[in-house]
Amino acid sequence: MTPQTNLKHVPVLSNEVLSFLEIKPAGKYLDGTCGLGGHSEQILSKLSPNGFLIGTDIDNEAINIAKTKLKKVGGNFHIEKCSYSQFPEVLKKLNIDKVDGVLLDLGLSSLQLDSKDRGFSFMRDASLDMRFDLDSKIKANDIINRLSEVELADIMYHFGEERMSRKISRNIIKNRPINMVSELVEIIRISTPPNKRNKTMARVFQSFRIAVNNEIENLKNFLKKYITYLKVGGKIVIISFHSVEDRIVKHSFKSSSNKGVLKILTKKPIMASEEEKNFNKRSKSAKLRCAVKL
Image (cartoon, rainbow, N blue to C red; front, side, top):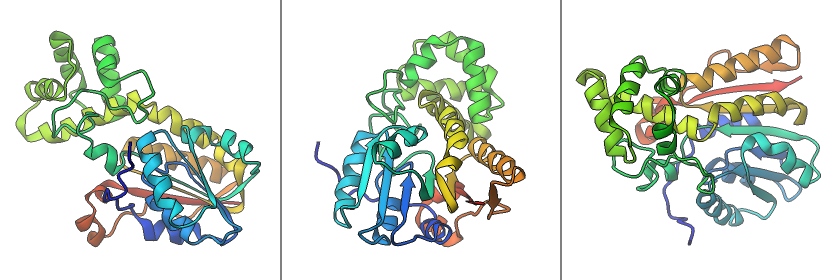
């Protein structure tokens, strides 16, 4: 497949990311969610030939686009197809002990959200797939059609904070099999009042996407490891897009701060400016937290 290098992609909070990371020209940096290479491109452009960028992602199409984009900037980078929680293996492979900075931009990329056949959005009909990694076997419809009523309700409640989770789950069970976006949308429609419907749609789709891609588990695994691989004075920057992830990041930073190994640089999460929100809709729910290793 030819990479869609002309695909419009605007990295979220890019000025803030670069400001917090304070890129050293000869430094080594990890972009754990390389995606379409928006942030990676900006980091790489600030590196000298002696610097190095490591990227990880699990979406093959995104990786191909990112590689094409980054090659125009420089050759001092490596992108590995794997979850960001597996970054220690990548660093070992590259003989890199520690890095000067780490970035995670969690959630959907523009490529995934705009995809017509992956089922991430409730705005267009498609198969209920929701996989970031198309080599992965479990799709959203597998989860929806196989799990019990209680398990489905728990996914929506814990990963989407959806208060109507039990009613939606009951209606899913009554109407299975459910394999298309339009079918899940109809279940949500009959389960919720009109004034709450769109927000509920977003929360339910978010929750199943998180379950399919093990997003919370990957984040927790990553947060247990990264400090070991940061140099003293190295920065960790994490951008999250919903309260479930942001809460996990906040508590992890606080715990490490209490142990004296991190200093939190963002007492409150950094949000996008009104100007950025106007031209980049994805930035509206973005929250950036940063800390430095002591």
